[in-house]
Image 1 (cartoon, helix red, strand yellow):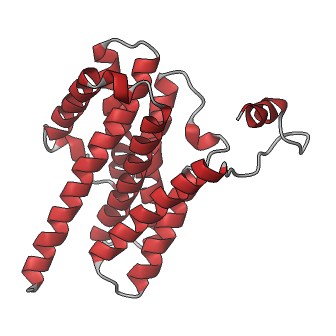
Image 2 (image 1 turned 30 degrees about the vertical axis):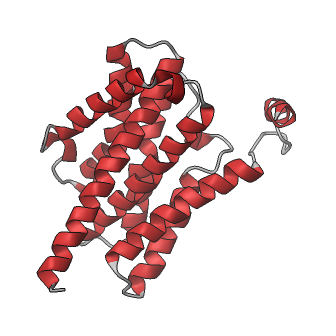
Image 3 (image 1 turned 90 degrees about the vertical axis):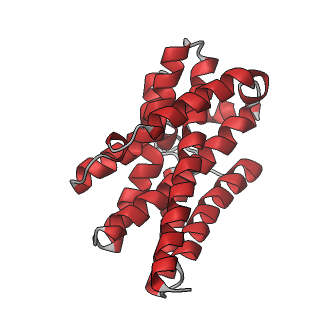
Length: 225
């Protein structure tokens, strides 16, 4: 395979990851909006900011054109995601694990996209790691604020930490000159794998409280599971 063919293939795969990530993030936002009984426009807005929020902040910080202002398809994909949730509402809204699945996929793929785009404009890897975490997690922060929930990234759930772990895997493969495609897939798989293990084994980060003990609210949540 020639260098030109390799570049084209890598760009195609990055585009596919971006489409899948946008759909997953938009559905996670729309699904949560549905649980709060938002109307269609409100649900669309929550889905859209979930899908574009992290990437928007990334592009502003990197001082490059904001990605979703270059093409209309991000708006269109979010509209299709809304239609999907409306049609399959009984499946997508009623099951809590559906949110976890779509949220984890969006988190992983957006983290990969953030790292890849940052490296493409010659920033160092440590900046790419930060941008990967921002791209992956910040849209979810805006989503949770809009639906009046405590942002998931600030709770005990392993969320942004999973992005950090995936980013470090990307970094390790990057410095060893492994194929870009493998770097991306390994990063995404690490993030999704950590999120799955978190759910399966009820893993969490230590909670910082003023007394040094687990708050009663979190103790109650633990007992309820």
